[in-house]
Length: 78
Image 1 (cartoon, helix red, strand yellow):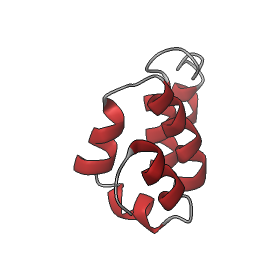
Image 2: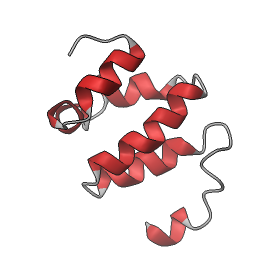
Image 3: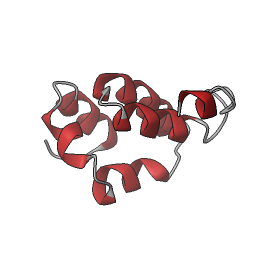
């Protein structure tokens, strides 16, 4: 996975942060994933909601200490 991420492109470019967020979520690095999810929010990328609502990582995200702040940012109850 790390080899693939070396070709993922800059996370600041529209949509590239999706791969970074999923990579860090799969690696158990939830706090780091929030950094990239924040980029996706700023880009108004629709994949953020798929990660939060339909993905298998939702429980880990909601257990993070960063969840309340992030939830307020995107207008979700926490």
